[in-house]
Length: 90
Image (cartoon, rainbow, N blue to C red):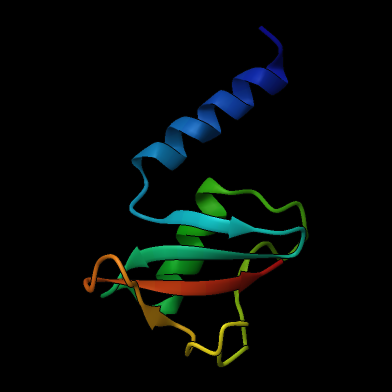
């Protein structure tokens, strides 16, 4: 098995165990669902641990005050009120 395949499989295993899930990802931004009691710094650290972005500074919680939909950032998850959605930039 190649080193790349092994690295991807290891990353997928990490992501499966994480309490943070990426539900939308672009080249330079992503939206994640995380535990609602986590501060921005913890969300950012976890996203950088499990989802490499390829930039020097990694993923950072966005300075945007709202999502493109107009919802505030962060906002309560529509499916689970104990979680929040965050926008991160690369």
